[in-house]
Image (cartoon, rainbow, N blue to C red; front, side, top):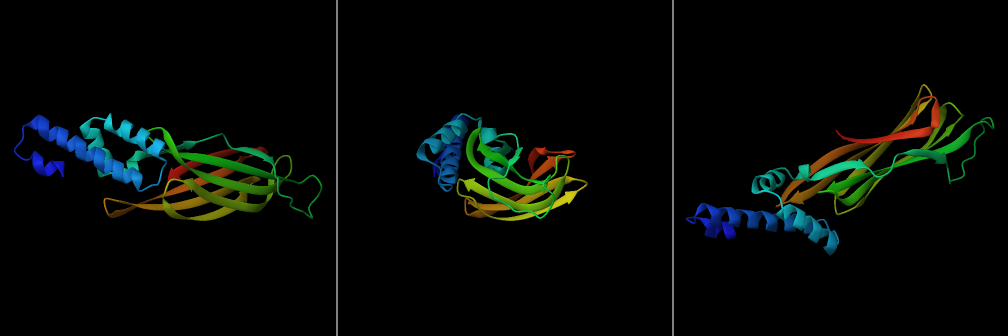
Length: 197
């Protein structure tokens, strides 16, 4: 609304009106995600501190607001769920859980989690038992499909997350591939990553 009144005003007044519009638009965007009032206030304050051109670029490409990174390093542990194997006693059931945080301006607003359960000897993954990917956090709608495989003793679990949301009435989406793998020759160690697809 402020931009309607900015026509014919000096450049400083137009810039102030534009910045005000940007903050209102960003506030509406954040409120659609259902974050807590404290988180919303923190995000709005960080957005308001940005220069106008940076605000404009974020609003032109809202997907650029989201950054992704590990919460903790993926590690392989004995599985808490009992699994019974007909394989030799040297085979143990293990599980790798990896969390990748979704952040806006450094504030964590959600997590992608992959849980990978497998059977392994001391040096190699022998068989996959379960590969599950999930998302928790702010209000993105989405779907997840998981797949797993074993190659040369290395086990891998991948979860493909297709997430969508609306911004100023327009539907937007992004797809992330969250991958968890064991280390070749040492299934007690794991790695996790997330990337655009």
